[in-house]
Image (cartoon, rainbow, N blue to C red; front, side, top):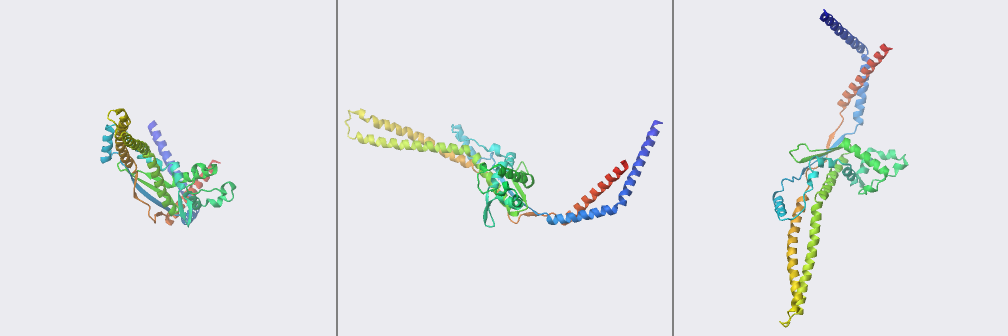
Length: 356
């Protein structure tokens, strides 16, 4: 008996639900003129937006990373050198590989330093930051604000010397680029190839910024990755020059001592002591210099091994890939969105009337 009552209640609820749905459908159908009118207005607005919306240009640059595991002959030579106790500097590439290098490209320091790169636009040498500001037409808005009207973003300027207002503007540009324009990805972890995509409404800005960012990160990468090897080579070079100078002095001292003892009585051997001491200095300095020269040459090999960092495969070439907001897409999206909002508004209005 209870099962039959429950079944009847379910049937009644389903019937009421269908009747309620039919009622709402008839209500919306009765308002078709308003919905169609809203759809037409939305389509017109979408069409207008497609004309106003500037096309987006995408610059793409791809490069290959250095594979530390494939050192080849250089790696074997360095391994052999380490067995003999030569400390030629380790590799600093571990912290700048894969995902770490991707994050380095998107870091604020690299992006902002790239924005200070000089470019030539309409015969004027300006920074990429100034080029971005002109493209966004910010200068016209800043004319009414004294604190911003005289802000300058000169090429190759010292980033540390910027004031609070300049820091704020650079921060806004970085946020806009990192969130909306800049994409850096390693498409396949098995392949050490990274792709940089920069989208902008200005075709030249997209191209210039992509190339400048790759160069900025490459220079920073070279400076950091080969720093230990360059320091080691510099120290060895100074030591080599110093020992070579001592050796030359010792050779000259031997010659002077020999001249002073020329034709000396064989019974006076004590007079030959300075020449003998100088001869020992020559032999010692020769041995030291030979070892230092070996280490210097190996240090040069290490530096050459550490220096190659990024091998560019593809560079952005004009004309760039262009994406435009299509007219048909604007009309369909605009019409659908406007119609949907009107339907929601009509439903809410009727519910509110029924409650009151």
